[in-house]
Image (cartoon, rainbow, N blue to C red; front, side, top):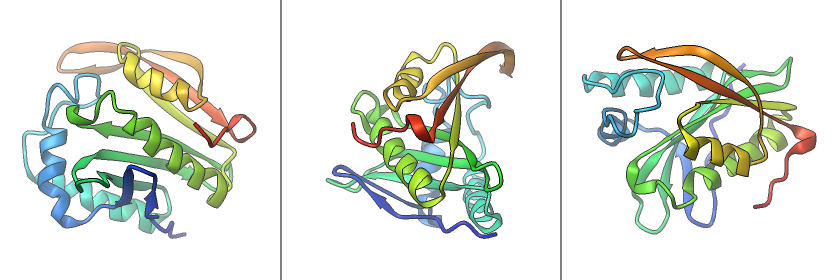
Length: 184
């Protein structure tokens, strides 16, 4: 079942399907060690990873397992990062939320704003009942984004990631349809 990749707007942001021309911006984002310091994989070193990522975005939509969207600032068209719904399961009416933003976007509310719009689409158009997210326990900013969106921390995955020899725990968050509040 194909999942149509939406184009969404907020007052400040455009959330859109990735295009091949995003590869350079995407590589710059995903190769930045500061951006990925709490990520579950090391920074990219090979530019071809961006092309594989873009192909995976298309495949995810074609297979109906999720949607990964580029996030641009409307005022100047700058690429800020991306957000996604993955592991979409129509039988269980569930999916997982993910996101990654460059340093220039941090602290401006962009991650919350984009995720809120993606969640609105997920609950309204996909009729989801549950969205899950995970974040490294050291990533207070990401935990704060999830909590502002109404996610509840449900547990800890102990030592579930090892990146460059660094072992870390993750928090699991969940948001149910009945708890969803679409307005800020």
